[in-house]
Length: 567
Image (tube, rainbow, N blue to C red):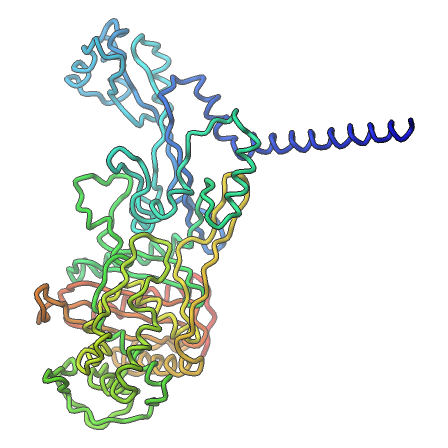
């Protein structure tokens, strides 16, 4: 009898504890997870319902101190609508309403006289204080309805990273950028808070921790807003000064792949874009476009030559200013030969014949394999949509002329993000990383998940990366603008690039160029890698157009992040 009594007490105690735990879980869900929904329901007691109110997760920038800043959020306002069937005196209604919100008389009366229509919108996105004044008028047939819409506080800031929310046919969703890439996380379904509560809670938790989960949440990006704003200002200056068609840039941590800034000019304001806008302005040229990059390919070629043992920095060749392969001749940028020079001078003076010599020494197949190892022709894995893989077919046939021109960045079309990734391997001890713009997802159920990206493969040996960094540092210290941009206390590894633009039918324009520039610092323990390019500037050489913007960004980053001197 005593044992039976004890067992009964245990059963009751366990049941009580379980019930208490369920109540705690439900309280957490109501107050934390679904607090906004309940607040919305309560708020709708004071405004007239208008069906489903738009809802969507937020996207955040993260400042250097970890502070989150809204990049994409929701803005609340009200729609003013008429029910002509109930509107007794349209003239009086117009007089009162037009004192509160701007109204066109002709449009107002055209809608107010539609007696067979119970709903006619006459104004949208009205401020809450104005909506309250309209409610206080208590005019029969005049209603205000709460509405939400997507809002980008930074306007055009990081527009190509964020994308926007818009309609495709009759479906509203993320278009371009993170809005598209993470649409399953950001979108909100029509959930019923009172049905299958516990099944929904545990389903959300399961989705959150699964690899393919699409539980709702907010996105925390790697974009640093002040760095982004500074880069965009520099790109605008480049485009305006040199009348470029497109200018773009990326600032990345070459060790982790974390992108602090990614921007293109011209950009757009996702708050005010129009359907009539050219689709081209929404496309992210840093991810979706491919270009022949020119001489910033030379450090990759030289690193491959060093890594294979074909050359050293002191290896020499006789430069006559041109080279003929497969009955085709190419030249140095100025057509001038330098005589006997070493590999350091090949980078210092950006000699096309010099890197072609490196390819000849290491062998065509070996060179092509290194280009593939740099990731050319493959996706980088960046978490932005519609990445272009690049055009690298010229590597396949192993003809001397194609591989020689590829060595100095002609004949291969690479996306800026793929080029940035390859160049980052030089700064990252020879290892590729995965570039990315999202670091964390804060799920609606109350949990967070840090996004991890796979480590890349080794392309070149650590000692090769150190040597190419030393050579590129010498380029800045002695050759770039004759050494005028050298910083006494900071080592910088960098290289310019100028490429002829390809004609649609084959061949190249003599007067259209793409300028590129990349650099990283401090040279032997890099915190930042900067990639810049500009399309068809009204200037011939990249050293003129991009050196100063690069140095402006470098000095800004050194000061902003308080990077200590390394020499």
